[in-house]
Image (tube, rainbow over all chains, first blue to last red; front, side):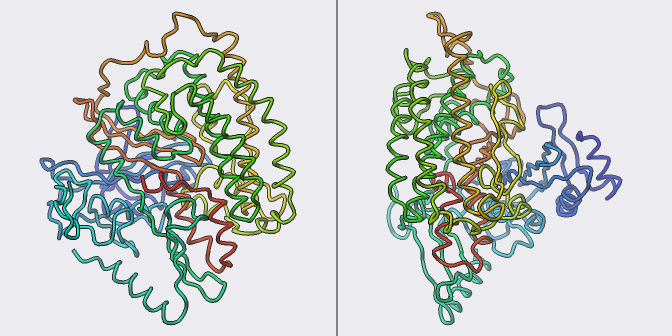
Length: 165
Length: 394
């Protein structure tokens, strides 16, 4: 099933405001989805007989940089019965404060793969996932400060009173 | 920022510690195959819940990749799944080549050498998986046999690349060097040597009644759960689905090669149990041997080495892909090795790289598999998933 058909299918089901845009003309085209609709979209894509995107290959949290001021999440879906692939993207403009994190809906209820990947995105990029029941740090220690994969991250000089050089 | 989930978790452990027993398995525990810590909430011998803690081996792969060029990152990909380094760098290199649009220009000989070394590495990696799995269950001899045979592979790959474990052999657009003279003959020799050894290993471990009793019907992973958790490789195939990216995506030289995809059939118990996952690996070794035989034959006949063949001839001088995002997936020894590239089209350095290690997803299923099992079975389950912590933590 090609991207255009998937797009039409989603528009027919949820209305046109669910699609925020499209990246075409490259090797792997992607659909941009409205962030608050991503859970129902993935639910539909997973269970619809025409798509069956039942496998979440990869989930990537993205910090688009200080200038762009955007955060996003990229989902690489795969369908095991149809052997197809699909890329979905969500993003929103958000400030870089460590107290007020950019928030997206969690996909844990649709794909359990998202559990650890969302924890990783939270851990390294400081993206919060609403509805995730266990959003702890995963790769870094629980008392780590800051989010190292952010573009403006400054490495700390001290860790627990020990000078780092 | 305070983390609510972390407070909840601490509360949970505190409550469990008064009613049940909280047992820390790892990070220094031989059967966790590295630095994995499983926090077990146990009721006697029964595991009520297993909470995995990973990250002890985190080496900031993705952060490094944001500061280095595509070519410079290849050694870092080797260090992800360090037991099957070739497969990782193969995935990385193919992804970059596709973004550059040069994936069709790679000489056939290079493609076949890549597949040959990848399959050798896959056998080496599976041998470790099988040998250490035997040790987990209590069989010591297979481990020594596996390591004896793996030593041949290590020696051969060292001969080709100069290193035993972390090769940096597959480069963008080509290879580090052509194979050394006599490598193909040595491969053929190894295949002849190894085939009877594999039969011996089967007699010793695969059909061993004690081993079957410990693994059959233990840790049954239903197919829908495996898919939902993003399991891949032998863990997914053990649950009975023919999902092998070498066939699905038909990359590199694989479409021209003849091999089967082994799946779990539940011969000794239920489909998707530990024995099935183990058996898939054993069968994959013989399939890899088949691939190696075919590669060697072609490399000796129509893709013969010639004095003017230069595996670096097609290497691009400047590796600057067009501005685009690309997700490359390939079948590593443990499953789907994925790299998500974001290229900005201006520099030789990727804007963002995400690495998807198959073990990371395979391991996440452990808390689902371990509900209500005996502690001894948990060891069997963990071993059958065959994780490499270098890849979980990256």
